[in-house]
Image 1 (cartoon, rainbow, N blue to C red):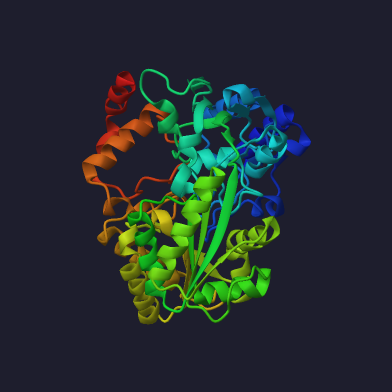
Image 2 (spheres, rainbow, N blue to C red):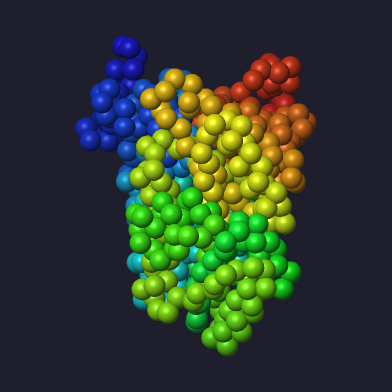
Length: 482
């Protein structure tokens, strides 16, 4: 305790009185992110510059304390939770847009810049930042980088890593690493790609160079309405088979859309079993042609009705329903567990039936809202947090769903990250040799494991992990190769 008070005093001298939270009530606000996991930090600090980040990391290293980088706390896998104490390093006061070069289609920003804020700031240029997680009004670009976030428009444009060309990263020892840059591609190892999605386990991002994309000339938003969930699922593959790649292709089942409609009044039909929200972007003539073709495919696959948004206001309402869906579910139940998994789009129907069977077997209600076009599912498992054992029951159901996704040829996460939620599920898709390599790589950048410990990689003790701990030269081998 005495040691912690001394560290707190040094941090307050460095960051100012309002730059450190040490009281129990204040720290309680940082025990969680958007998921269900909890963990109490010892301290929370708010640097305003790269130099202050360096100073905090060096101080933490001196005293052997863990550092947990944090953005807006909207993540859903426990990535920003202090699993075993330590210092939460909140980056949301580093909010400068450092430069915008429209002619080069690049911007350089600090990690605390809110995702949507960047697009709004440059809206007059005709360009925008593409990645659009559902939380884009609150989530930060630094957080997007840490989790390699996606969003509805991932289908056509890709996830965060496809829109980041350079990073400034502070390593565990306080050294600064600069990767990539303004150019479209750089020689050597793709360290930018390595850092994106590393969930704060390799370094702390203090600046991000991102691509800017020209706004499309035309946009059409369609709502396809179905009386059978299977017909909606079949339409997803049929659109792809027709050679059309929409900018977005989202699906909501009837249970979910009714809750959303009650909260948002988006215009979703209350008597339907499922809807597809489809967006097509591009040149005016191309969009008109593709919209007509998609409508024909939807009808042929069994849609009872296909609506096209008549204006920007109607389009905005349809998307508000999708973007505010998770919040709307709180009207049904105060507690629900949001999971994400990935499957081939041709397996949407069987997996939805499997999810329904899991819910019935566990006695839990499960709703579905997801990025159907790229097979990124978001099952919502409802439970009563006041009843003992209900949260663990929801976790068990969610683990079953992820295992089902893997059995169908998918993955354990598409955009939420692994964090502390799915670290023990990594062996479902990686061999022990794969995981060993990841551990060695992590050790090259984070040799004493103080950066976001207990995240991403399994925490169980195996012979190989013991060998790594007692033979640091294994990590040095990887460091030498880099």
